[in-house]
Image (cartoon, rainbow, N blue to C red; front, side, top):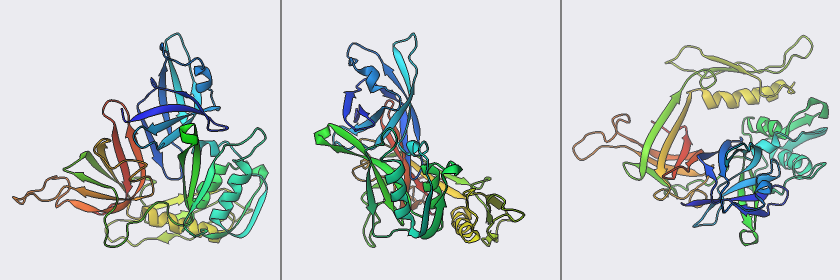
Length: 373
């Protein structure tokens, strides 16, 4: 196995126990959102005496550790365990982004403040501390940008979660990006989350004339490839409007943001980025950002490789980084190597997430959004 599991305290990050028998099918990561996983914990002769503490709902987190490099590409809180008459305990896990959805924002007023600074303030006040303590999460700002400058207010009576507040700010035109990763301290005795945020884009860009640090190729180490081109409702539209809840007789809303498309009829989308927004200019910003995101539909390229053959997750690349890809091409006889990709496709694009399969042969799949044809 390439990876091993640890249980750590959510309040301190201190290691509670090693979990050599833990069974997890797959884990995944996505910029700016939570992911979940399920696990089975067999009770065997080598189960530690403190296994109940290691599975404490809300009080323990499972951390995945790369045995060769010592990095921790993924971790999640234990949300639920269900002991029964068998010798296997099912466990439900959710990444720390989900914890932000269980903390609420109080009364706050921000006048012409960068979105990055708003987010840092919200995390400091409502996540790192609390009536029963918070989580030990370091905040790292990537780059010098403080993000789009906005006027923003919150009311305690609105019952808005920190996660909702962060995602609304991120969905603005030119909004910030953020994710939660993990770091190891005290020579591997402590593992704590790290909140990474950028006023523009997370991750490393490839300088002009240079190649990315990680490239996935098929034929080559990549064993399977799929390109999902989606223009279903919610994934493609060329006429977008952002709306909010009614204020008296007038409903706050943006204009129709129309993307000219000579090959498609009108496809409309109306969405509500935040029920608290009553400023048409803010809604316009949301609409412009959304229109740019879905005007041509969504395209997601997934490239699956054996972990042992692929660029190393958490070492060579992570979510937000530029990733190189080479799919198909022409052989020496002039034939397509992969008929579904005539002539092949190649390029560099950002990894917006990834999936790590841990059953059997360990496989990693970077999720690359919006690759060219």
